[in-house]
Image (cartoon, rainbow over the protein chains, first blue to last red):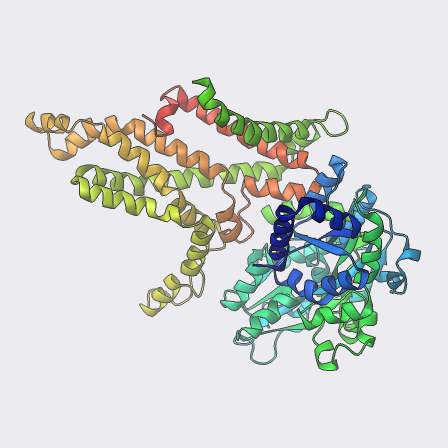
Length: 351
Length: 270
């Protein structure tokens, strides 16, 4: 049973015990509906960020979760009466939603914590909330030493024989292909899409599985179905923690983020803005990686002293790790060129 | 009578007809009338490839399910009642396990480090693990497994209605058992064959979980294009156009089949 269910139970109980008293209290207290992706990840946020923020602001945070918020955002805003306020979703969707009038434009003067973050970590519609990375992961059974350490190695099927998997999605995969072709991590954008697909054609016959879900990527590595793959760092470390002989490198990882954004016409807009500011507070943010293998969205979290250096070294957005990686440009991916590249993926896969 | 069925009709109207109608509407209306979504479906070759692959896989699954299912139904029909109940329960048993779990079970069996590959290597049949999954083969195997009951049950229902004295009559006229089977039993069971095949074929056309989990990303069936289009085009219309084309193909198949056999029979009612 999740925390959310328990709360729902209480709310229900309260409602049936005394309707008048309950509505009186609910009307007095400010509240928002916050939506994330569920599972261990949302649980970790509840402990690190949501509960402390609710307490500090004196508001009620109702939680909802959905693996892919995008269709729901479209329907809710399209209906004219959204029920969600704040959504934690991949940054690209916040941007795209902003351009399509589905997401509120942010007034950063009301969000000082976000205004203090580096510009690459925010955009007019959203603020980075947490970081994860698409990394090169490998089996230590197959590669006890001299493991593949870059996308050039991943593409080198002679020097590093073995089965391979990539994500069945162009985002991060095109970046990896370009790095395999010798493009420096900080010189990727705008992506040379033709070059990336050409390089992908080269590795395609050697890809055993094109995975679609994070769980699948973890299973492939755990069961020894593949010897190396692109995977999300949190998935790989979870498998390693369970005892599988697997590891990964942040070298040439693709640093990705989810961001917080507010639905256009959100029912509790003012409270939502207050919450947004609190959610990226450096201390709350620093507490997140103590509960799950994702890095804080606010880099100031590393200066709070809450994250021990040993722990920081494991996190994707820790400055030294971040320096080895490519920071994903969601602005490029939501540009027409990015959308065209995304559409091209389907025909690449089926050829 | 109308009063009795009206709750069910309302539920169907509210939960099936309205949403499907709304989705179909979206496919032709987005800030004005548009056939763009259909133009895409009929001109871009990824859609053709997916539709072709989906029909190929569905045909293969139907054929294999018929080959596997017919003997089972025949056996269940020719043994005493107690045994036939046992056989049919075994056929229906997998129904109580979710499709997702069964797909994962096949993964555990078929993958490189899976049970079958390890057994083959232990027995020295193969030296390298075979690629049994993450491809079309794995998808077909698991889909056949999931859809097999839809073949066996209509077959069995039809065979039950074939009077056994016809076989005795054939034998008394001097025909061998195999000749009676080919000349008498098989033709009489054909309506069941058609019913089972239609059921399996149509269900397979819309399959999602098995190709998604076991297809390795290369086996892109139509249902997967539906979900992919929501992501790619950010409009339900782009996805529902694919769904509408698939739905119309299914209705067309039902229409053609219904000219040969009553629909009640396909749905196992008569």
